[in-house]
Image (cartoon, rainbow over all chains, first blue to last red; front, side, top):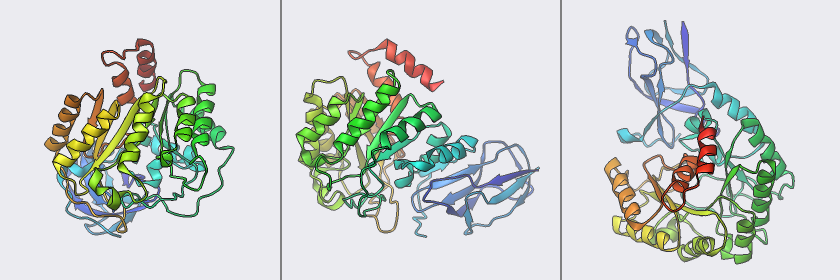
Amino acid sequence: MTDVKLPPIAEGVDKASVSYLHHNAGDNVKSGEDLIEFVTDKATFNVPAPVSGLLKEVLVSEGDEVKVGQVLARIE
Amino acid sequence: MYIEKRRPSWLKKRLVLSDNVKQMKSILSGVDTVCESSLCPNLNECYSRMFATFLILGANCTRACSFCSVDNNVPKAVDPKEPKKIVSIVKKIGLKYVVITSVTRDDLPDGGASQFARVVRSLKRYRQDIKVEVLVPDFNGNKKSLEKVFDAGPDIFGHNTETVKRLYPLVRRGADYTRSLDVLRAARDFPGRHLVKSALMLGLGETDDETIAAMTDIRKAGCDILTIGQYLRPRMANMPVSRYLKLPEFEKFKQIGRGLGFKYVSSGPFVRSSYFAEEAYFKCINAPGVADERVCGIMMLARL
């Protein structure tokens, strides 16, 4: 099982809001494809899947505010 | 948290999952970078490729430009150890191309020019083949300050025009369009090897004609490299984005820039003056009339 975490964006930005889920639990995902979209004050970012596999769990919902380092999803 | 929710699809960045980012954050923890102070959307990407732009003379600026997120606070005393600190970090990262910028220091008699010169010289002493790009404030147009920086021998001398003439009072209070062009002109006229670079932000309310007029003025002032990017509002307190330019519009300005005779134009929504700065330099020195194969070779190695 691989944890998907929110990577560092910028020093002054330690949290971001989930704006779009590209996939739901149960989907097969490929390494490198967009998984979860976030917005900060300044820009919009996508977190890619670190590995290919089955998206076992999505731990955040659209509108959630999450912190850098927080686990967002799990891929098996 | 303020969020401009409806950003167009071309203004989305894919984050890089790399341990380099963490490593860079830890190495850079003792110094200021403009990457962090400006809340740069490219930080994650640049850190993942082990690049950063140093912010010298403290993180407090004596001006309060409406586009910028750098703190406008009482500035700190100049740190005499700063050049040494930067060299030591450059060594740790293994940088062969370094970009140095600063806050504006209207409180200092020379605007901080001596510190720029000290940093450039220290880097050149550390490694003769290192390439140093400076991105300086306007030093209130003080020729002596500018010459201090030119004399230190940077490879690129940058000063950002930022916006069109009409928007200066709104965007860059305390700055002056003509003065900024004079800074570029002084860089062109100084007998050094440096290339001259400038940058514009679009989406602040300018018209296309005003942008082209600014580009023409910048080119006439002797600028070799121009970067053009989308203005993004860092915080609610900053001025709002007037509009998001589409990708073909950035391409159009790139072509216009080439037609005006710039040696290199980088234009795109996420382009910032130091974004892929080494690539701009490398491509520029490889342009007809300014070829320098030896340096190109070094730059190629630096990218490997």
